[in-house]
Length: 410
Length: 229
Image (cartoon, rainbow over all chains, first blue to last red; front, side):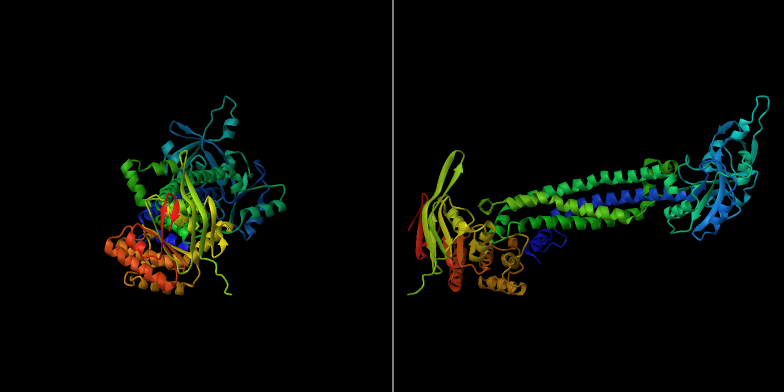
C-alpha cells in the first residue's frame, strides 16, 4: 500500500477510533444526506414519470393507426393483419370526440371514446373501474370517469343526457333538440391527469351513432406484447402501409414526456447543489486540517516525500468520504423510501392535507422507480465532487515549502 | 597513495539572509563546515543566531544565498527539487525539538512511514527494521502507543528511531532535548550518542545545553551569523 494511501486512511481512522475522526464522520454525514435527498427525489420523480407512462399506455395503447384524423371505414383488413401479428396483444377500433353531457342543470363537455369490446380490450379500463361492471356496457349505457361523475352528481344507475356535435349541427332553429339518454354502467378512476383521460366511454356502435359515422372509425388502438419495441414495430408497419398514419404513444405524447424528463433533470440539477454544499464543507474542513498539519506536511517532505505524493493524501480522503457517504446516502434513501407510506401519512396528518396527493396528483401511494442511470449519475457526481473538493487543500499542501512548514511553531 | 574520500557534507562559504519588512537580516555569513562519518559536532548559539537555519541549509531544506554545499561530493545546487528531496530522505535524518510525530499513527507506524516514503525495503523488512530501531531506543513495549500516550522522552526516542529508519549517513539534531527534563534529556542524549556510534553516523547537534555540547569532539558557536570553533 502506498504510504500516502495508508496515511490518508489513518488520518480518517486514527489508531483506536474505529468510527473514524470527527472530520470524517461529519463529512460523510454531509455527503450521505445530500446523496439521500438526490436518490429520494430522483426515485420519486422517476416513479411519477413511470406511473404517468403506464397510465398513458393503459388509456391509449402502444400505438394507433389512423387516417390522419379523418373517419375511415375500410379498416377490417388492417385490423385482421394486426390481430394476427404475434407481437400484438390486442387491436381495437375506436371513435373519439367531444359531447355535451348533462345531468340536472349542469352541462359539461367531456372527451368521449367509443370502443369495441368484441375482442381483448386495448384500454385497460376494467382495471380502473371503482364501481359497476364493464360487461354492462351496452348501446344505452355509458362508463364515466369518477371526476366527471362527481361534477355531474351521478353514480351507477343514474341517467346522463348527451348532446353530440352532429345533433347540434343538424338543428334548423324550429326543431326541438332531444338528447340521447344513457344509464351509468360503471365509474372508473384512472388516477391520472383528468384533463387527458376520456370522461365517458361508450360502445363503438353508440359512438358511431352519436357522430353519424355509420361503420367508420377514427382509428385502431394497438397494444403490443411486453418487450416489443414500439418504434421498430411502427417503422415496419409504416413501410408496409405508407398511406396510413401510424403513431406510437411516445410520439403522440412527446411534449408531455419531454416535460416529465425535464422536470426530473432539473430536480437532479437543483439537488446537486445540496451535495455541492456538503462538498464545500469538506473543502473548508480539509483546508483547516492542512493548516493544522503544516508541520507534518513539512516533515513528510523532509523525510523524502515527493511533492506530488502529499496532495494525494487529501484527494484520497475526499474520494473515500465521497464513496462512504454515497453508500450510506443510498442506504438511507432506500430505507426512507421503503417506509414512505407511513411518512407521507404522518406528514399529511401533521399538515392536515391528507387528500392532497390524490387530489392533485391522482396517486393513492407515492410511486417510486429506481433507475440504474440515476444511481450511476448520483454516484459519479458525489464521488467526483467530493474528490474535487479536496483539490484546493491538496494544492495548498503541495505548494508548502518544507522549511517554512517546519519553522511554524518551532 | 590512498584515494581521498569526499566528505559526507561539505559547506563552503554559506550565507543566508531573510527580509523582514524593508530590512535585510543576515542570519549566516560565510559558514564553512565539513562532516565525515566520524564527525560529532555541536553547535551552540543564542536564540535566533541561525542554528536552525544552518541545519536547514545542511539538510537542503533551504537554499543558501551564497556559497556551495556538497553531499558526498555532489553539489546539491545541481540537483532537481525532486532528486534533492529523495537524496535528503536517503542520506539525512533529522530530529526536532518538538518531535513532530504524526498524532494519528502509533509509535511503530510513525517510524514505519519514514521507510514507506523512501520505499527502499520490502514491507516485512521495513517492519522488522522499525521494530529493531524502537527496541534499540528502549521502546519495544510501546509499539502500539499513540504519541499522546507517550512521555516527552519517549516521543523524542520515537522521533530518533524515525530519523534513523532509512539508515542515513548524517543525523541533524535540532535541540533534541530542549523540551525534556534533565534526567530524561540525559537518557535521550545517551541513546543518540550510542546509536550514532553503533551505526557510524555523523552527528550535528544543535543545543543550548553546554554539557551536551562539550561532550562533542568538534564544538562550534554561532555568533552574529559566523560559525566559530
